[in-house]
Image (cartoon, rainbow, N blue to C red; front, side, top):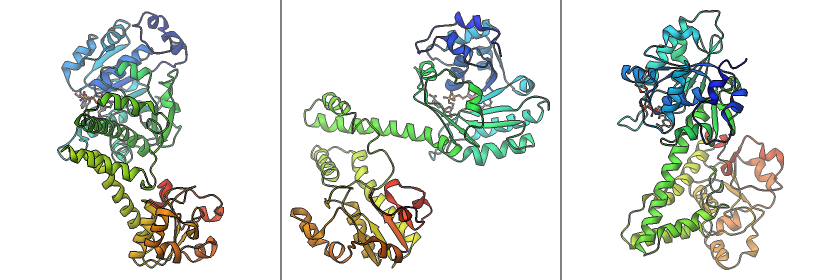
Length: 461
Ligand SMILES: NC(=O)c1ccc[n+]([C@@H]2O[C@H](COP(=O)([O-])OP(=O)(O)OC[C@H]3O[C@@H](n4cnc5c(N)ncnc54)[C@H](O)[C@@H]3O)[C@@H](O)[C@H]2O)c1
C-alpha cells in the first residue's frame, strides 16, 4: 500500500528516537485506527500513531476531551503530544467522537486505553473495561459483513485471566460471535512513563503482544514496524502479568533503595556513594542474576549478611519491611514447597531429595534450604532418601562437620550413592539444584518436582 500522505510526515514534529520518520513510514502500512479512552495512554498513543502516518479516531465518553482533541488540543499534559495532535488535525488524519459505532465500518484497528483504577480492596476496577468491551461488541455486530476482520487491541492494564474470562466472552455475547471470524483480539500492555511517554513509545524496552495464538495478529498489523525493540508474542496471561510484574518490581526497587539509604544515613554514610557502588555491579546486582523463580536463597553469605543488615537497622531504630520481608518471604517459600510436596505425595512418600548442599559445585551446607527441607520432610514422617554428588559425608570438615553431626540422620543414614534404586521406589523426587549426570529419563520423569525452575511440576503438585 502506498502511503497517501507521506509528505506530511516530513513536516511533522521531530523526535529524538533513532529512526527518521520517513524511513519508519516506508516500513509501515498505514491504518485507520480508533483509540477508545483519551487519557494519558490513549492520547499519547494517538499522537504517536499520527506521527507514523496512520489515521486516528479518538473516542471518549467525556465530550470535553473529544472536543479538545478534535481541535488538536491535548486533553492531558504530556511533552510532545499536542504538536503531534495538531499536525494530525491539520493533515485531516485526526478526528474525534463520543461513539465508535457510526465509524465501525471505516476502521482497521481499535486500541482500548480506558482506565482501570484501583478499587478499595486493591484489585483493579474493570468497570470501564467491561463497558467499553460491550460497546465494542455491539458496534461489531453492526459492522458490514464485507469488511475485513477488525483487530481489537487492549492496552489497559488488567489482571491475568481478564482477556480470556472477561473480554472474549463479553465480546462474543455482544457481537454475536467469537473472536477469529470478523474480529480478532490482542493484549498489548503499555510500558510508557508519564512525562517521557512519546519517547518511550518510540523507544520501548520491549513490545509485548498477548494473543489467542502467538503470532496470530501479525505483530498487531505492523503498528510497531520500524521500532527497534524486542517483540514478544505470548499467551494472554503472560502478557497481562508482564505489566503488573514490571511495576511491582519498580516499586520494590524504590523501596529497597530507600531502605538502604535510611540505614546508610543512620551510620553517617553517604547513601548516594553506596548506591554508586551498588549500581556499578552489572554482573550480579543490575543483571538477571537472582531474578528467576526457583528455590529459596541460602548458603553462608546471603542469610548471614541480610541478618547483619537487619541488625544495623534495628540498632538505629529503623523499620525496614522490605529487607526483613525478604527473610520472611524466603521461609514462606520453603514452607510452600513442602506443602506442594505433601499434596503430590502424602507421608510417608517415599521421597528422593536430589541435592543437599546450598548450590551445585559446593559441599557447603551452611544455611542450605535443602538441608532444612530434608529435616522438614523427616519431621513430617517421610521415608526420605537423599542424593548429592557434591557431598561426601566422610570428608566433611570444620563447620560442615559440625552440621554433619547435628543433622546425622540426613547426612549419614539417608544419603544414597546410587540414585536408581531410590528413584525406582520414590513416590516423588525433588530436584533441589541443577545436577549433572542425572539420567535423562529421571529428569523427564513426571514424579520429579524441579524446585530450581519453579516449573509447572510445582503448580500441579
Ligand atoms: N498513565 C500511565 O502512565 C499508564 C502507563 C501504562 C499503563 N497504563 C494503563 O493504561 C490504562 C489507561 O490509563 P490512563 O492513565 O490513560 O487512564 P485515564 O484515566 O487518564 O484515561 C482513561 C480514559 O478513558 C475514558 N473512558 C472511560 N470509559 C470509556 C468508554 N466506555 N469509552 C471511551 N472512553 C472511556 C475516560 O473518560 C478517560 O478519559 C489504565 O489501565 C492504566 O493502568 C497507564
